[in-house]
Image 1 (cartoon, rainbow, N blue to C red):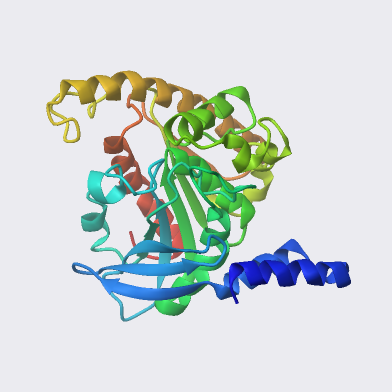
Image 2: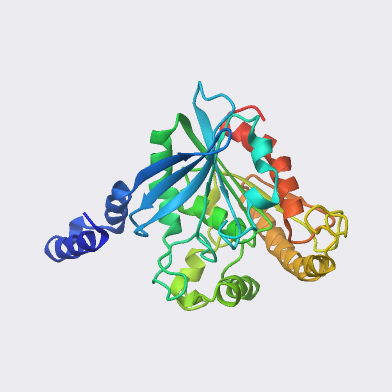
Length: 335
């Protein structure tokens, strides 16, 4: 059954028996139509799982790093890229050594390729530029059962992401409280309904992605923005381990001409120090506010605030490695 046919059936049923048709039933029906179309082998233990998402009516490639020991079930870490969605070169694969790092770990690491400037959320309306985005449905309802069926998983999950996805992973954990044992936000702003958070989202979605933010969550400052604000919905994180990392925006050891990702490029260095510094200082404010909120609610959370560091990949690579031992324990595996 295609997406259009499903929609027609759902509307028809709602007219006849409205008390039986709920949004959860519609989402469940759509999720059941999602499927794995192909599993493409890669180098070593890396494979690309091509997933048909019924909610978005398109194929989504998901890069999966398989565990070192495949003879027994392992948990899954969903590791999300930033604003570019892994469609550009600003990705875990291109900017870090995450493949080598996880080569000795007993965990599946799943990274979808796509979702640029989408905030990995369910948009209220299709966007003329960014298209149809139902990433929350895909990541919480469609993808996990398919990976659990395809691979020998323990069904224990964690989710982590950087920058834009640092906001998204918190919202995913809010939306699916029992899906993840741990959530890690690396330089993500946990505020979406205050002016600073809204300005940051406009910069990502509107200025960089050329999308219309009102198609995402409705009018700015409206109920859709409040419903997708991790700070406001923090009580729903109870029972999930929360890890957040941030720098201060002050240049640090990865903000020099000799740094690996700067590669002696003065233009790249200036951009990283000036733009990346300003962004990270704002993200630091969001993170400290979220830390206080979790403390007030007595929800266990760890915030790692680096004394220096800009909004850049060198620090996120370090943050992933620093938080992994804790996430591993939450997932029930050795670091």
